[in-house]
Length: 258
Ligand code: F6R
Image (cartoon, rainbow, N blue to C red):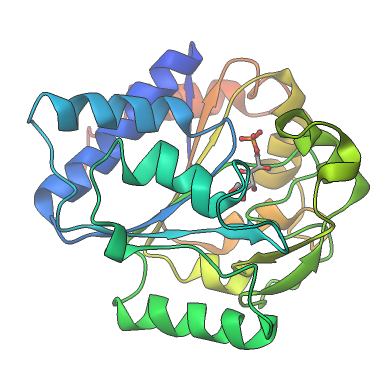
C-alpha cells in the first residue's frame, strides 16, 4: 500500500487530481469509480478547473458511482444521482450517458444491483476507484462486517453513518435507512484504488484500515488486499498511524529505483 501524507487538504486535492488527470490524459476513455461526500470535492474542483481551462477532457471517459440511497426520488438534492450530476458530471463535462449510479428507486433492487455489476463489466472494469472512508471504516456503504467478497447489493446503514450524513439533510430522520452499494469485492476489482481522507475525525478509521488487521469490522482494511492501493492523507487524518515516519521516508525516496 502506498501511504502519502501531505500537509493540507489542498495538497491532497492537488495530488489526487494530478493522478486522475495523468490517467485520463494517457487513456481518455478511462473508467473512473467516483465517490460522493466531502472527501473528494477538492479533487473534483481541481479537475473541473483544468477542464474549464481546456487542459483536460473527460469527454470520452465513463464513471460509476459507488453507491446510492434507496427510496430517494432521483431529483432529490441528496440522491447520489443528483450529487454526482452536480459535482462530477457537469463540472467535469462527462457525457451523462456514460455516468452510472445504482438505481435506488428500482422495484427489484437485487436485479438493479446485478445490472450495475454487468454495466461495470461491460465497460471493461474500473481503472481507478476514488474512495472516501467513513468514521466507522466503511468504504462505499460497506458497513462493518460486510463480506470482503461482496458485490453490489442492498445494505442497511449504521446509526453512525446516518448520524454522520444527517448534515446533508434537514434532520437525521430524513436520512434513508437502506442503500445500494458496490461491494468490497467489486471495489477490489478496480485496477487502482485511491482513498482520500482529511481531518482528525478520520484518524482512527485510517489507522485501523492501514495498520490494523484485515477484518470485516473495518471494511477499508480490504485495501490491504489490493496490489495498487494509494491512501492520500493530510496530517490530521494520518495522526494515529504508527509508521508515519516510515511513510514519509518512503515518500522522500520514491522514484529513486525501478
Ligand atoms: C460516498 C461513500 C462514502 C463516503 C464516506 C466518507 O459515496 O461511499 O463511503 O466516502 O462516508 O464521507 P465524507 O467524505 O463525507 O466524510
